[in-house]
Length: 616
Image (tube, rainbow, N blue to C red; front, top):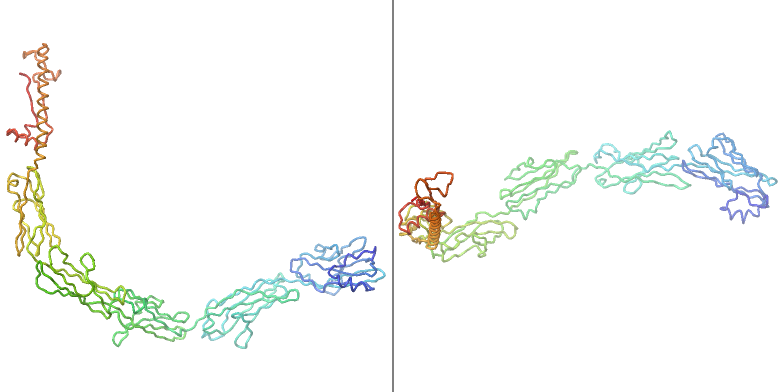
């Protein structure tokens, strides 16, 4: 080598060969990779590694490419004095590395060809080697599209399952098909996978393929995918599409008819749903029927359209019976039937028997017996009118009947095996007896001429009538065996003296009580005291006025003659009369009481205003 230096083109990667083996060589040797692969648009780097004996230097290095006519075209001429780049189509995309490696940027699909490195070493001669530039483009992930219309298992021809497309690849790839993870292979008249390869204007390839294969009922769960295969750096690579499923049409093989809720728990009043289910695709046409004697009643019009659902609302014992669901496949017109028995649990005929059945009087006893019918076992319970449980069992014994006790009872009938199935029957025991007055407003404190309410409440059966010994406005209120009468009257002297008699009667007897009316002495005393105080105040006012007049007269400031008299109350008005007015703020009735206390027979209005003439 010139200057005792190693040539710049010697690559370290070839160390074993060059240091151990080539060191003993006596001639010029050049090594290059046989193939360099680069993706479209990338940069290709081609190395030229050489060895010159005795550390001699190279004279020149030339880079060439082989054109379509198999002619070498020079790209670079490199000497110790400089680098000469030839004018070629690559000129703007070429570059040299420090190790004299050739780089080609923005590789295109037209670049795949052979590149030659030639080295001149003076007396050691000329040597060369070459590299094949391979350009590739990784295809896009394949896109798969399943048959959108669905496939029938009874299809007369081999159906298309799906289509697969992969774009922008170089060199051309190929496509394979897979079902449930296993690769499919072509079979005569059964499985075919035709493919189409298209070269686009860009020079890249688009490959498409279709899968044709027969289907069965089991293929409703099958998953299909396609794979695109391509070569890179001497190895095979693959890209998988997303798996897809195909809508398979097949007739029903099994039919189910269910009762919701469970038929063993249905009770009267429930809403029941009959659900018919088939394992075909698409769902067949459903029809519903109910067996009446030897005929089937069509209930299809009551079912929900195209759903296989029949709803029965508020069922009762007439809803019992056998129901049938029928499916019809429109593809092959096959039919399947399934029936189910609907059992509606119910309670009917709840009635109560009373012993003795004759009329009951106060103090009597009675036995109540409850009975009902049901296809399942029953349990009985007695409750009072407030819902309180009295006894378990179908009999209730009640003794010492009275008006005051609750005489309304309820028999509750339950079916323990059917939760929520129960009925109740109320019975009222009529206890007859003559009236008994239980409340009366006596004694009652009143005032003269006051409007008051008199109350009389009694209990009896049959319902009694209430009469009063005095006239007034009466109102009656009836609640079961209780009757209440309110009488509105004005207090008079006769009412105070005689009181009021309440008489209650029915066909079994009469009960009466008298209401005693007493004068409210406290209220009367208070009224009289107020009136007396008012009179005293009035007298004091008159006395004060008299003293003032007398004082003025003595001083000579009040003339006594008629011609010279003065009006001390109205200087500018009439002066022929001096009047002092005293008004009482008491009510007329208080004035009346005062009148009665003083023995004065004048009207109350005359006592509410008093006038004193001071002219004489």
